[in-house]
Amino acid sequence: MIGKVLSHYKIIEKLGEGGNGVVYKAEDTNLKRTVALKFLSQFFSSDEESKRRFIYEAQKASALDHPNIYTIHEIGQTDEEKLFISMTYYDGENLRERIKSKGVKKEEAAEIAIQICEGLNKAHQNNLVHRDIKPANIFLTKDGIVKILDFGLAKEKGQSHLTKEGTTLGTVAYMSPEQARGEDVDQRTDIWSLGIVMYEMLTGKPPFDADYYQATIYSILNTKPELNKLPKEFTPIIKKALAKPVNERYQNTEELLVDLNLLRSGFPAKHYFSTHAFLKSFKVKLAAAAIIIILLAVISFLVIKKPAVEHSTIEERKIVVVFPFENLGSPDDKYFAEAIAQEITSKLASIQEISVISSKSAKRFFDLKMSTMEISSELGANYILEGTVAWAKTNDKKSTVKIIPELTRVSDNTIVWSDSYDKILDDIFSVQDEMARNVSEKINGSLIPAKNTEAESPTGNMGAYTYYLKGLDYENRWYVFKEDFQKRVSLFKKAIELDPKFAGAYAHLSIAESGLFGLYFDRNEKTAAEALEYAEKAYHLNPSLADVHFALAYYYASCGGNFVLPVKIKIPSPPIACEPAMSVSKSSPIIKKELSLPKPSFLNAA
Image 1 (cartoon, helix red, strand yellow):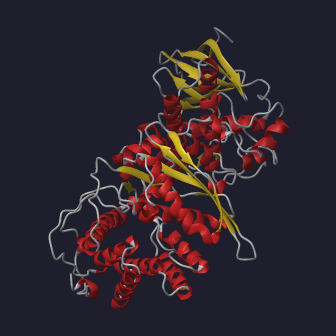
Image 2: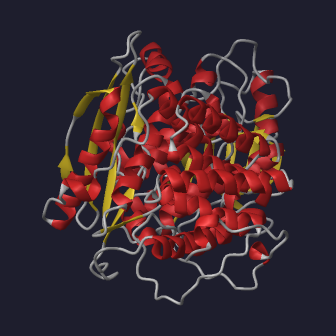
Image 3: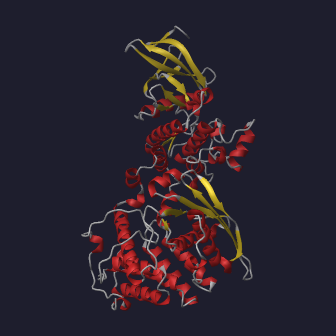
């Protein structure tokens, strides 16, 4: 073939061979440019199905005008009736060659993955699934541009199979589970394959790779990838991309692109606020409302109960973020693990020597799968507390809970404390107290006296506490629906029925009622009045509880209560869980009055 002139192309050299095609470098004698010619290999040239797929590749790829997808110039046929595709010639190497020759650095891997994802996103927007994403089909130009090659196995959504019934397409080590089973596939198959490619870029080999076909298929369907080989910041992304159930994977390339861009950029705040769905317009307003609520909570706390000692300055304070604990028990117990972490957050927040990021902020960053350095940059956290919870239920009243916490110092990513608590469920409150004291000791270098952190059990009824934790689970969810507020109200009321002196349940019941009113789910004055009634009840039961003052503040912010401080005071760094600071105008429509509601009776004497 070398030196031959086919149509108006002069063959210069052979570039490679794979799949069902052979690629040559050639000169376009008409336009005086260098091109790549892909010929259907001789082995497949007499096969009508292969010809159809070859033509289909040219048609579909030529319709995808995108910088990360190779450009098709024309499809032609030689005098000997050999089909070929003329496409742009790129100077560089494919990703398989790069991995074998010198490997791929972390920064390069993120950039390459983003460009692949962008190209796939274009294909998916055109209802086209590639189905054969692998390093050999990813070309890296010397200019740093990624090109996705070979749409020969691509399938348009809703189109019948181009191959014989039952035939499995794709390269086995990069197949998704559904592809390996011969099932219909969609864009999530490409996301799986991209996850394999990312894994291989970072480790040098794909996660599911055996010596023979059947063993590889078995591994794809039944084994878990060794994620501990990956850089920490890539682990959650690749883990989600390689979820075997398709509904647990990234559902589209746009979702994956968000996380990849965050990873590459070190998570700048401007990108975070512009890309995530929970910060669309109405949730931006909720964020502003949350800041007002926090400020009012601090003011209320300081007016009603002044601290016995002067607070530490901001510079002296150590900042802790508590992540939702991992649930090792039944999937139905996930709420319990996450709520335990929130309860520990509240315990830590009562210690004056440290500051604690609020549970909602912690969960926001946890869900984004950020690295410790990113968390430190965005939240200013010095320490991260995370852990696992296993709840072993029994038929008697001796159900046990095993909690293994782990405290990490962000500055050097060092675990400074870990422990194991294996207690009956009734001891859960003493465990929370002890953990808070131990965390404080490791942060401040001295043990905080038990009297500073210990508080009486919030409830003596574990059934009430279970309903309370379930209510907190709904409270901490990002989405905001009326039904979720109503479930919260129902759960907290059940907790109160079992323990009529449960101050925390009253406080959060008040918060839920205020939310129903403030978010226009239930603009009934009775709802607002109940919110105030429950907040007052909580205050009378336990005036030192931080959640009580939060409930009062939330009532004022959400229901339009007229609250005026009796004196002007200087507000120090708050000793309660707080959101990252942001400015809110005093004229914000969020705080406008809509009803003239009473202030709690116990404030009249202030």
